[in-house]
Picture 1 (cartoon, one colour):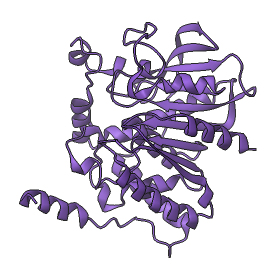
Picture 2 (spheres, rainbow, N blue to C red):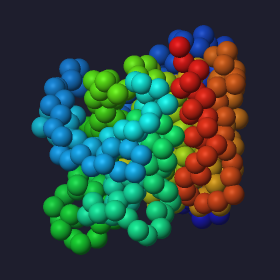
Picture 3 (cartoon, rainbow, N blue to C red):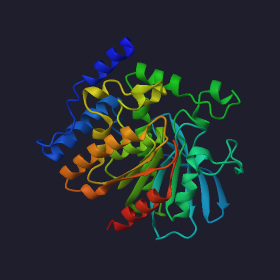
Length: 343
């Protein structure tokens, strides 16, 4: 093996992971300790939340649902657009809701059946497979936020490049790191603000809100659910793994890296903060970025954590034949079951 690579492997492998799950610790004590340490590594969150100040940008009737484009305030001085998909024939009224988080690509339009310019897409939907549209057709109200660094939320130099998929992750992440913040922390907190907004909508059934994300959106979905107990259940697609077997094996986008996180825990322990609430993993057997070997290691660790929480049946997985992509049907069925079972 490359001597330098071996050195780096030894360095990361020897990081203490001092907040990792241990069976001898009471579950609640472990969870609260790691959640606090994780929040600190992310850069912390604002002590007070600024007003959402929602503005409706458009409202379009689509086959079977209404699509709204809304803008809200997340951090003071920072606005986020999102799509809200409202089923015409909801399974219940008010209905359960899902926050759908896109990965790298051209933003929230990519999961809502649209081209980058907002027109209806006629081409192949790619790895995201328009999963926000699939979810609204399942009867859920769906919020699809524009993740910071993508789509309409890019630096001018990237928006004017003529490349819809060109993101601003590196420069934004770099600036945040220099200010003691992280892109992961910003995206997680902004997703919490989407949850704040959903709680104001009469179409949404209180306490019945789940989350689903793919790739970098899987990071956001999993870690938001880990730190915000208002999220009833989570689907993490194409992300749940170990850091050692995924982002540390190749050059990944800078937004994946959280300074000092291995001093506290590995990825499965962080996702384990979701317990005892439901967690479901999607992993393609041909995923080159977050492969099945690491995902199966993560599932084994999560099963141990959920067992200690007394809810071993609340963690599951779909290991499917495919690549770095949404699979869909098993996860959608699982979400229906999870949110239907809530009182």
